Amino acid sequence: MIVTIDGPAASGKGTLARRIADHFKLPHLDTGLIYRAVADRVLAQGRSIDDVEAAVAAAVAVDLGKLDRERLGGAMLGEAASRVATVPEVRAALIRLQQDFARRPGGAVLDGRDAGTVICPEAEVKIFVTATPQARASRRHRELAARGERVSHDEVLADIRRRDARDQGRAVAPLKPASDAILLDTTDLDIEAAFQEALKIVRRVR
Image 1 (cartoon, rainbow, N blue to C red):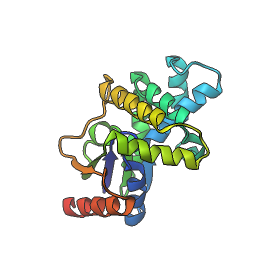
Image 2 (spheres, rainbow, N blue to C red):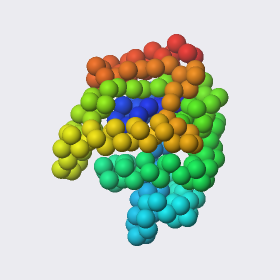
Image 3 (cartoon, rainbow, N blue to C red):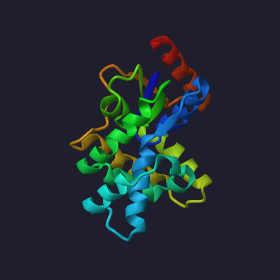
């Protein structure tokens, strides 16, 4: 069983994907974390985030077993990852890595921006999670505050809107629901309610 959970930044897709994976005892891959790792490697080398050659080299070197969610989860890397993700050569370098993960025996759960449209169009269950920009900014602001990052709610909201525009407008693999994805609006749902709704979708589709 392959389950894809796509959606914009801070929609709750990552938390849902981890809960779904744990419930069905499936491996989970946060595809967005891969792009954060690429951006992190480029910046650590002192290269510009817009350096295509450096970004592609970083993508080729990605090790899925060494993705550190805590270290890669900061606000700065979110913006940098969004920029790296617009580079077609980077996406091309990473697609096979993600597909191999998804197609392991027994299946997997993947979350990201294009898991159901590009990485695994054959997925058995596709969910597209959304929420208003204001709700997503509030969630992200709380998350960053818990990490000790000082950033205003307005700054987070502006970043959310920038990333939405970039993700939806890129030429390759833009953010959009797959034609057969089921929409899940989490604006007014806490994580437990959202998880229960996602679980209903998976069971209904299966």
